[in-house]
Amino acid sequence: MKTQEDISHIIETLKKLYPDAACSLTYDPDKAYELLFSVRLAAQCTDARVNLVTPALYARYPTLQSLAEADVDEVGEYIHSTGFWRAKARDIVAASRMLLEEFDGRVPDNMEDLLRLPGVGRKTANLILGDVYGREGYVCDTHCIRITGLLGITDGSKDPLKVEQQLRRCIPPEESNNFCHRMVLHGRAVCVARRPNCAECALRPWCDHWSGEQEEEDGQ
Image (cartoon, rainbow, N blue to C red):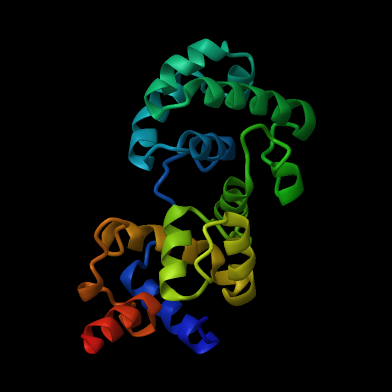
């Protein structure tokens, strides 16, 4: 596992590499529910695809009320290309109704209430807390899970909850949300799952995976 000094170096290096740590999903900042639903659509789908789909969806249903009253099958037609569209459409309509009926149309600002919403898991809830409310948000998506394991920040577990718990112990809360966004950016640009470009990676000095590769080469 990394020392806190190593982790500080990793955080600062990532800041230099990716100064803009914004979420890649597009949404209206005045309509937090759009981000909530975009994250749901992004399950088993790329953010780029979601960003192509949501403009038409939110043009057809411009308010939370209109989504709550929408026909699930019609919503499904708009989001079909994101995959698993039936379940996603059901969750979006059901969550819209719950937001109106139980939260006065406002996206909750705490983990407990967010997790009550249909289709919302810890990853989504953490993203909302970080991006919408500026709080700590340990968003453990596939990039974050994989890269923190390679670096040695976590123990290599693939369980999102275990990774989140480990990150909470070593990544400062005020850095958490942007750190996780930068993990995604690094996973797309350099530490790509199928072909990590270790030779060009600025995180090499603190990477357990790179150190292991070098030891294998030296031993040959």
